[in-house]
Image 1 (cartoon, rainbow, N blue to C red):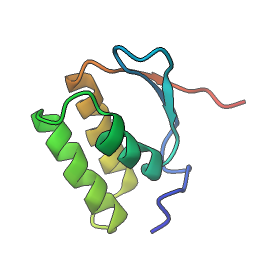
Image 2: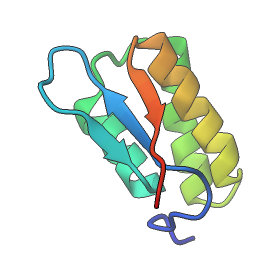
Image 3: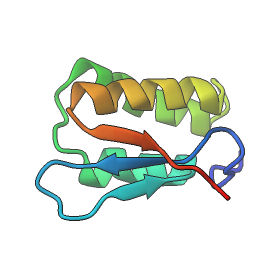
Length: 88
């Protein structure tokens, strides 16, 4: 599994509360880092689902798109604004 692949989904910019800068998530690796190191809360149901989905995507048990959907639901639950990044 190439968890640095960028073709599975469109990059997204995340605006974390209390953070002066936004983060752009382009890969499964970026998303895993965000979940484990920079997520504002680790007790939400969608957060737990997204962490499990991340492990499942890395191991190939689910598609990266299925993980991405879980990741965006967790962002919504945490009040993180997610904006699609348009590539030129």
